Length: 445
Image (cartoon, rainbow, N blue to C red):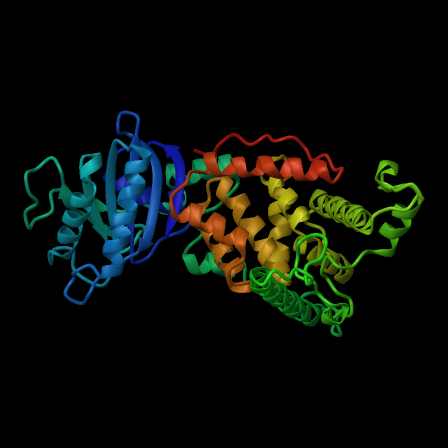
């Protein structure tokens, strides 16, 4: 499902249908679109789209009925004043009764917000395509003949499309397929002998194996604890993992590696262990040293990525992409980078995340696509956000941050609410010793 919030007004059903691509960010095909209105019922609030799913006889499928129920709950949670449905379908005539039956079902589901105000059907949202009214709440029942009809205008030059382009610098994409193409995979770099993707795959495999070992250790601990035996637990309470269990991948991207330059800086004058943490003999707990060293590496990588964002648009070399891949796999770094979406660096971040989402693979690609989706989400482009989250979950199934934001998008949580997640990122960055630019974004809805 695509959900977008974009406050604007239109006059007349023809203008409304024509404005849908601008409201969504792309031209929908074979879709059910619900548009909510607020204020006095004349200002567009949220636009929600889902694939249209009807049986051959025109009866909605079980999936479609579930979608309608979900969309109705979203409308209720928003306390909308009015809802209008637009059915885009080129597979049947508008007068065969299927669309009126669908509108009646939607009307029943929307009883908590006063029912469905109106519904229109069109085979396509393109200039000159006919549209017809299939439901009008102002009449007691909808007869077989449409109450009003007309033709769709040019969605590329509609007032809403022009306003969106001026305000946000975004054009309307032709189809959902075109959106997907904007994130199609690209080679890592121009180097024919580049092994970056192979390294990523090996690193992801090692990460998965380590996760399995940890889970096995936790399960074993649970059994041992019942037997009163805790000798397999280390000081941090985590199941002990033998050194032999760690397979070091050549050129590893994972956060188990430290750059020599970071190590040198650390040894001389950065992040030296707190003297108060040492014992009487002047020795330091190993876990303190490791934690501070890791934070030093994360700070270095965060500063590096912010520097790339600052010069977004410039081509990245193979080494830059590999370091970016490693940085995005570090959770503290990734969580801090979320905040760039609400700063004046958001456009540069969007460019960098797009490039990374197309050129990286595995968890690095998933992180880049998720960050890209968040940028689109908070700037009101729900359609592109959903496309980016889909890519993230394809690159790394179950990727937690993508799952979280995608679920919020599906539930119809407005950009003005979800952008508060960026607040945490500023705190994470400060904990690493990095001060990000201040937030400048006003809620999209």
